[in-house]
Image 1: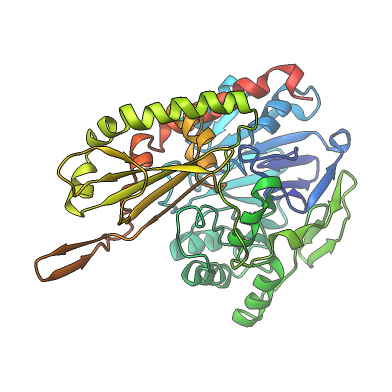
Image 2 (image 1 turned 90 degrees about the vertical axis):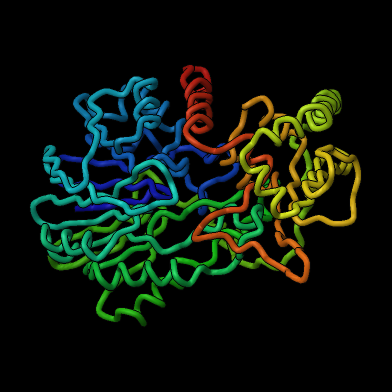
Length: 466
């Protein structure tokens, strides 16, 4: 069996006369065009072998790229005529595949065997509770050797035990290694290697005991005006993980694995051919651009709308919304009880082409009114680009874009004073203190469906797929 890394989590697996492609990304921009593959690649689609099995692990946009999927669906040569498409039981993901006119879609079930051509495929479950939609890893067995693509899944000892019961130690595993911190900067969360999560990756590798490990699923970076976020988002590297794994579990062999590398897996072991692919290669080794240094200067927010006339139109509409509708909509939310109870003084700052303007709302005051300008105390802040607040108002964007690329930033310092008492808000478990803009425009299935359907409409026309 052979595996070739195309980019990020896009993996090609070949054995006998069968080829499987997982989580394909063929083009430069991904995740609503905030990111690009890193390292950058040259991909010759004419040399890509026909795909017998297309596997989609989950709906995150670095694994479920609508532009690539639209291109595959419209191509006469990428998918074999009888190709099988594997997908999780995710209503929105399946709706997108239907809109793109994919055939032979099979909804996977945890540990339910799929026997197709030269491969025995077994989807492995994920215990991820952060997202409301399902995901799966994949065991691939060709009658001789077994690989496990963990992708982004979170697994338990029982899941590992079941993998061992099926095939023993995997001959090779593409394993999680990098806790991504995207959004931590914008939401004022800790910007450091999350030790508990990172150690769990080492523990999973140690429990799984694959004969050979390559780090997987973390090959992108922020681009252009968002580049400053690279220093906040990628707290470790493939090489560091492999060093740590060697100290943690010396009997496990491993290697870094970059675009164009080809792994040949046999019973005798794994051989890595650096740059061995004939259809994909590294165009530029720009991995230094994701070096983790969360101490450098941060640029201010600036609206994405550069045309002055359009910006003025958007600005006027945003100001009218804040001054005439914002309070009425906010006080209708259940969270207003929390803001009042915790004596919140809220500041909203909107950034345009030339600076910003500020409005404040004192939930501890006698009346609920928006005040233009500063007041003396702030303990809840939301700053946002005018362009992105305008798009939220018009339901034309999502928090996947606004909250991850630094066009929105927030912090909180929630406490209340009572006679002789000082109380700080801690929250129970993973409870988050409510933010007014997020309460007005909540993330969830409705926002996600609209986001994906915009992309389907954009990339479904033949003229835009080129």
